[in-house]
Image 1 (cartoon, rainbow, N blue to C red):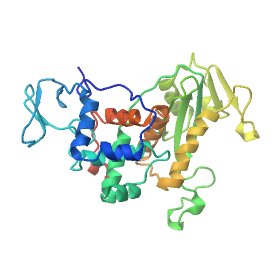
Image 2 (cartoon, rainbow, N blue to C red; image 1 turned 90 degrees about the horizontal axis):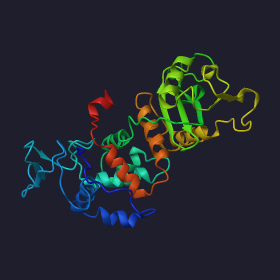
Image 3 (cartoon, rainbow, N blue to C red; image 1 turned 135 degrees about the horizontal axis):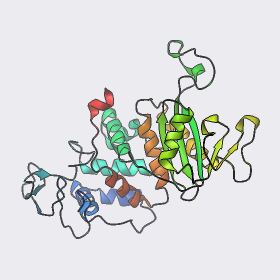
Image 4 (cartoon, rainbow, N blue to C red; image 1 turned 90 degrees about the vertical axis):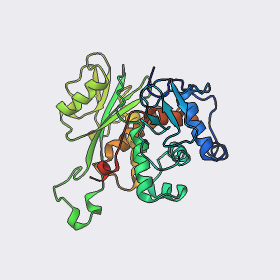
Length: 316
C-alpha cells in the first residue's frame, strides 16, 4: 500500500469548476481538510498514515499536537505530513486556493498577485508557488515517437540590461540559459530540461533518456548537435525552411512560446537558479491540460507527496 493517497479517487467527472464552487469547497478550514482527506483517503474515509502508510490510524480528539496518530509508527501526522507542504503554518484553505489559482492561470500566477489574493506576504507567496512547482519535478517520460526535439534560450536581452550587468561577449544568446525539450507527436506530451551546453553529447544524452534513438523518428532543426540521431529529418531554419512534409518542430516550439509568454507577461525575470522548476511546471501543466480543473488540482496534490523544499535552499 502506498504511503499517501492509498484510497485516492480517480479523475473527477466534471469539466471544470467555478470560482463560486471553489469558494464553497474551501469556505472553512474544516471543508478544506475534508477535501484533502478525500483525495488522500478516498470517499470511504479509511485513514492511512502519512508517514508509514499504515491504516491503523485514528483521529486525535483534541487535534493536538496534530489531528491524527498512527498506532503502528506511534507518530502524529497531518494532511501536510510527508508532502512539500510539511511544516507550513498556512491553513490548508490557503494551499487549496493557491493550487486552484495556479492551475487555472494559463501563464501562471506571480507571487505579487498571490500575495494580494491570499493576504500573505510576497516571500510566503513566492515560497508557496515554488513548492507547488516541485510537485511537477522528477517526472521521467519515455516516448515512442515521432518526436520533435528543439532547444531555446531564456533570459533578458543584452541591449536591455544596465551597463554593469552586460557581459559584452558578442552576439547570440549571451547571458541566456539553454533549455532543451522533446515533444511526442503521438501523446502530445513534452519533457524539458535546463542544460549548460548545447553540444551533441549533452543534447544526445537528454534525447536518449526520453526516446530510443534507434527506433523513434526524430524531427529537429539543422543543428549539428542532432546529427548523430538515426531516423532523423531536419528543417533548415537558417534558410527560412520551417515545414517540409512531416518534418517540422512546430509542436515543441508552441510549448516554448507559452513558456516565454509567461516569462515576459507574468514573471518578467526567471533566474537560472530557479528556471528548472518553472520548466518542470510548464511541461507538467502541458501534459495534463486535457484534464478538468479538479483532476489537475488532484494531480498537484499527488505530486507533492514525498517531496521537501526548504526556504533556506531557495534563497541560498
